[in-house]
Length: 143
Image 1: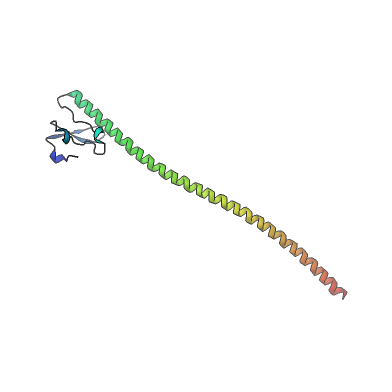
Image 2: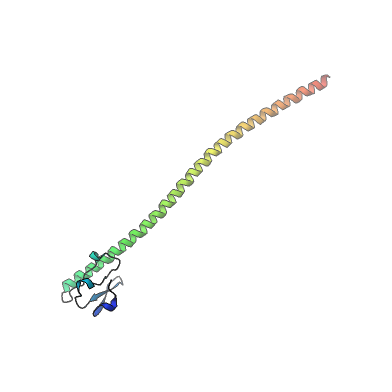
């Protein structure tokens, strides 16, 4: 990219989107074409217009507008890709949590079944203990 200090007499144009760009008053050598949009590839850069030709100036303005729109679309794509990454991360987290919740639900069911089995065993033990007490009391009473 050629710095502004190396450019012959430049004039500044202003478009509707408040974007400044420089247009040379003279046709520069081919290797000194300034990058109007530094983030664009060289082959996508608007070429300086012929200032004597209204058609050339119009084409240049249109090209600059298209380049701006292209930059905006690229920025929007980058933002959307970042948002996509965030959403994928959230989805992965939600799926992990769903898997964790399903695992916890299975563990809960196993523990509930174990609890029912233990309560049944306890009630059977209580019954058996009561029967043994009754038998013991009968033996004590008969002796």
